[in-house]
Image (cartoon, rainbow, N blue to C red; front, side):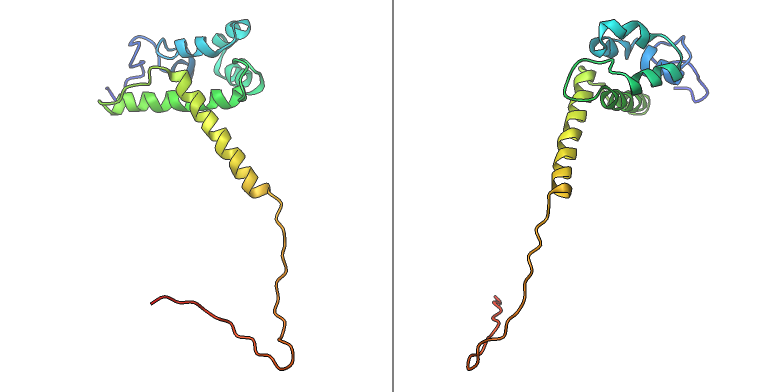
Length: 149
């Protein structure tokens, strides 16, 4: 890899812009075509980076699943960038075969963990007041501590 190269490592003849890296490269486009609804596919694959980001953060352009599209899209973009870096710097790295499934599973795991975290944080707490009462007249109270040596 040349340090001063601005060409896509995969395509070889296209400038590697962020939009090319995340959407237009033939290496990533098949993943998007699997998950983007056909009714919005034309909008998804056209336009500049600002339009593309706005579209994905404000609309539901993906399949109808239990996760928000913007969460899946952000996770997929993260992985696409991470995988490209690993391909450029780790000779043993192999990109996942089912890229969209990889991103989907990661978002699903995040949702499960986030839900469990909210249950712990938002679970109403019960306050139990404890205290000590002196023994009745004529009695002695002893606190016993068990220790093993």
